[in-house]
Length: 154
Image (cartoon, rainbow, N blue to C red; front, side, top):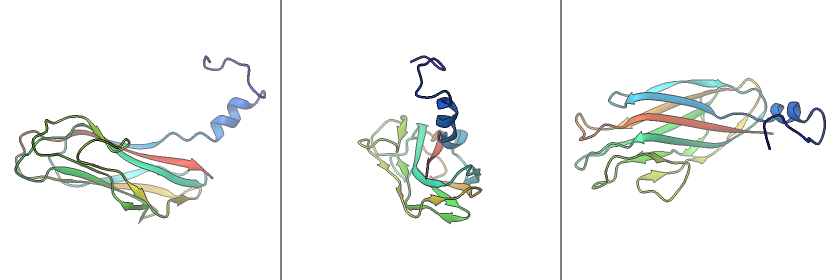
């Protein structure tokens, strides 16, 4: 179906769908993750619902076969975490630096988020904390990270 081309179930269908369609809140960290923690606000909730997914995607997972090289994230609702198990992207020794995501399972070095108490109300503030774990000089730096928080209407 083409955008804004019918037939639609009612004349107000597009407005009704738009009112219940929430784009994911996203934080983008551009460049190398060669520094410490990054935190900030993702936004305020426009409607009541629940956090249905939290995931990370990275352009380059980095490479360090001798030391730990990983990145994890926490998401907070009004300052309280909504994550029981944090999403993690970690370098696996012997692998090349590559794009990885925690949204789909099956890749090595990936831990998907497990959510707890993800309910949100109108006006709730969603914030994040991204924590890289690295040594001073990995072979290849991790770079270009996106953190996505999906909210499902009540």
